Image (cartoon, rainbow over all chains, first blue to last red):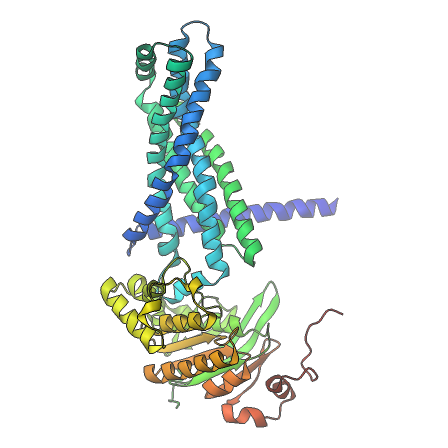
Length: 257
Length: 258
């Protein structure tokens, strides 16, 4: 019994230690976001990497999600299906599915890649080399990714919203034979700015979380190839859990009465 | 060779990892323009000692004084100013694999010293010539180079900002004997041309004899001998004798699982 308590105690202390380390890492990273020098060229490169190169995967995910949503919700509405399906698709996409699915896709594509890259740099002493070359590794490695993630995720979600709603429209108009004009009018009438704004706020938080956690796990990895693999897995798992947690918190902040 | 005040002083340095000692009461003075080599077996604490001097690892207690200043009592800004006088060659070169050779060499000048890109590249090319490499390899990535060429690039990167103090971590490891000797010659040339103080760690005795003015030996996380290079072969210390002659039998026991 005493071993069980000891084990639970160790796990709990480890959990608190991890939270403390992430908090310190976050504070240092945010501090370096606002203190010179800022490497604009690196930020530009990361904007391209996180934003532009994620467009195909995000676009496809949003398109098929919008299409499936229209198909599935069609069965649920017997009256005024045109209006209701358009509303369900647009609200679901803008409030929830757009930001969450984009966040999860980018977590897999970018989070894993950042964690793997930085942890490889850690185990091959490249981060120590950066320090000895008079450069702050937070400024060089973390800040550009943090800024790019926070700025680009809302842009990606905006694109995902448009493509997702368009996917629903395609299925509604061409497969379910809805009236296109009615469908578009319903979409525009019921969609409020706060629906889009809440989604973009979520996206910004998710982008920050993706960059921060992937940099953190990579930066603190050790142990060769095994350490790199572990850092990558930990990053994707932790980011996914945090995205779902923050999704609930932000939804509660925006919509709970 | 030596001035009154040591360039680098290590005073009673202790460092433990998870209650396991890795450095135990290390005290060393290293003088200006001196080439100082630390020898010792794997796990003797050489790399940790080097990382402590570089400020990458903080010792549990003890002082590291560089140019008369305790580096762990300085503000971040002042410590960064002292680090700008360092040049480091890492054991596996630690070149940035996402960049070309030229970008690797110019990295510290562009990102650390905020030098204009054109100027930094010109200086990097000059240093590549200095270490015996030509412009043709500047656009290659480090993965396309042999181990010896990677070491040369790493040396060029270490000396590009013309540092006061050079650190070499296992400079000849993984190289064939001829290339190792070429790298030794290059280290001697760079240290002389820069009028730098050099600290190297190695277990290659040929390299240690060739590049050093003084040698220190670590064993079991302690400093067991320090003296001039020409004294190392005549020293009356069984541990040093076993190590420099590479003998399996002697007081140094390797940790082997039977």
